Image 1 (cartoon, rainbow, N blue to C red):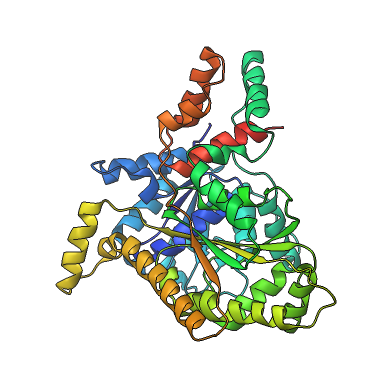
Image 2: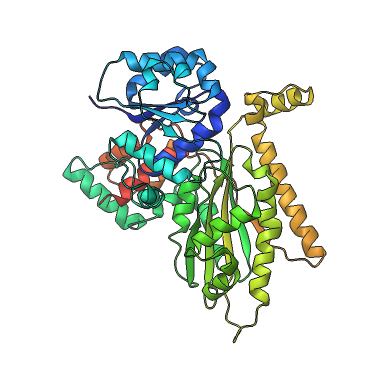
Length: 446
């Protein structure tokens, strides 16, 4: 039996942020994830949609928390999955609370769980365990789990749009000729943003460049494209990995930064960065922050205080000549998509002192805009006070990609292949990230 998804994630509403981050991480290694908020359309029957989701996913992943154990919906999801009786479908448990077999019930108590408590210091190791569980593979030596996950992320993942006929193979070759072998999928309705990045990356000053837009607009893919910037001016590119959650302190931020810079000791951050800047720019890519992470004080301090002070230390050190490059930080900021009318209602309800999950989600764009305004004000205050500061650049918001965008982008194809290409890319696609990922796979297929 074939399945549209590799895994269905069952979670309580209180654990939504963790489930979303989990889905994004699993998709990085090519796994297809069914998540309720992304697959259930407004007006759909929740019962029917969940049942279809359970049947369309090969495996079930159950995020066990106190909230999950208390919900009737999650118990129903578990019962529905178990009743299928297919032994080839794996039931996986991410245990977020101390294990209590009396509360787990017979379906879960005998299964080996993935113990993943709050504040786990090795989230990437847990992700490797989970990937292996989904694929039915042994995880190997524990000491290698984190490294193995990072290797898996760096490998090409995701379902490719396969060429089924010689004509389709020819069409794929035309795509490559027209747009280049790699990276050109981001020109689909992203020309303005990409042009901004090219312009800013060539400037001589240190900068933080922010990629803005609702979730599922392709932030991660945009950063992937930045990794392929032309080497003029000369530059090195490093990815700063934060794991599932944004660091909560300067020490944690700088620990991740040190690992990105060839795993240097934290106390050697300034001289290591200085050495890399001797005759080239350094670009540091940061994963998108979403939910309300962009409001965290530590995140704001990272860009307004800690990084400017580190870069100032690099600039002030004696050097033999004037050749020195610039630091370019690229940071994604994503928020829950919400129509303008719904945001207005949420603001009104919030002022009345009534809060809830949908209110918080609807207010995320406003929260992101407020955080951006704070970044601007603090950078300007520090500049005026003669303190180390960083130039901040905000790209235009990533737009939603439409069928018309894909059609226009690929209009050089022969008519029959043009129509098939657009059909394959758009079939069942609910968001821009899926569309871009499919085009990327088509262009980069071996």
